[in-house]
Each structure stands twice: as C-alpha cells, then as structure tokens.
Length: 127
Image (cartoon, rainbow, N blue to C red):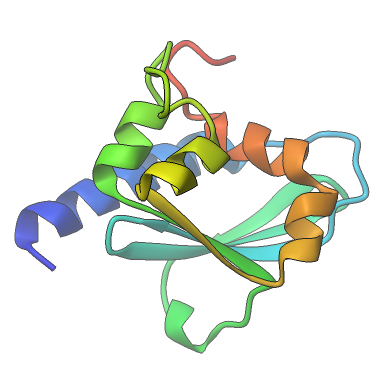
C-alpha cells in the first residue's frame, strides 16, 4: 500500500460516507457488507433498506455477508457523472478487474439493484 493509494482510498471512503449515510429505499434489505476503496475498508450495515452504520475502524474483526472491493481508479471512474463504457456498472467493473465481489452472494443478488444504487449514490450529479 502506498501513501497516495491510502489517501485516495480514504478520500473515496469519505465521499461514500457523506452520501451513503442517509441512503434509504423502501426495501427489506438486511445485510452487512464490506466495501473497500483501494486499501481502505469499511463495513456498511443496512437494516430495513436504510444504511444504519458505516464502520471504519476495527474492520478486520467484523463479520460481513459479502464484500465489494474496488481500486481507486475503478471507484473514481464509476462515480463520474457519465461513466465510460466498462466503468458504468459493478459487474462491468468486476469483469475488467477493477472490482472484486466475495463472500455469500445470495444477499447481493437478491438485492442487486439496491446495492448498485447505494454504491452509485456518490456519482457526480446524483441526487
């Protein structure tokens, strides 16, 4: 991990936290997911379709249902107002190697649109 990567990851996490903390949709989503921005991880707890907590410290000892881990470039491109082709979607990012998906995939696939919307919420120009 380089100093610049850690700073970029921290900035990405800060951007995500600022927007995602108030994310809510009327869905019965109950998951704990690990989201990693470059080398900086966070646990996002979702209850009844609402982000209830984003844990940034002590992540190594936390359990989670699934993980979404992206490179700094991957998140930066994904969050552009109009992402380029191949950078526009979580599965496209996974295909190009800029993002990995790990863990128990059933809750991810059962609530895929919710998770996609949550992770895209910091996108430039998003409301």
